[in-house]
Amino acid sequence: MKALLLLSLALLLGCKKNEPAPVDQLPPATQTGANTFGCLVNGVPWTPQGFDGSSNYSVSYDQNLYGVIDLRTYRYQQQPTDNYQYIVIYASDLRGPKSYNLSSSVDTRVSLNDRLTGCYLNSRDAGTYHKGTLTITRLDLQAGIVSGTFAYTLAKPGCDTVRITQGRFDKKL
Image 1 (cartoon, rainbow, N blue to C red):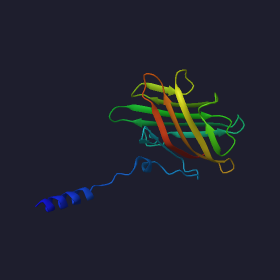
Image 2: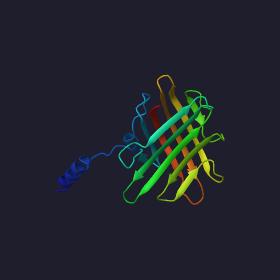
Image 3: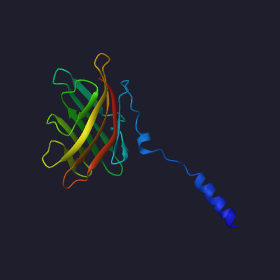
Image 4: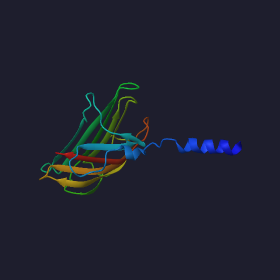
């Protein structure tokens, strides 16, 4: 009887459906202009979503204005309550594929605005801890493609620390 119970338990546990890892729920890190964006926010998959199902995601790059990249996206969630989350990454002096420190330059800004919690974290605000990197993996102005990866942490008194990891974007300019 004991053996039958153990066998039944083993079969039941063996049939349990495996959920994909959080990082596997993000779009792949491509360099083709696939118009994708995704990251983990405190370990939870985050991709843009809008009212109408559109991506609500834009990236601009201006080589003449000090090599400025401006990445903006938001996510609207209706359940459990109306909530908007905005992510902005802005950096200047980007001249090609390499890693850039988002922590030290005054010409960078990383922000996250979460309407549900009422927290607005901006790396330029006094008292906000910020540390991160942006890696441009492809900057092809002739093909009009910019791709990269990013990770950063933002924290300030009164708000939960936000850790953004496994960030990736691939945009046709």
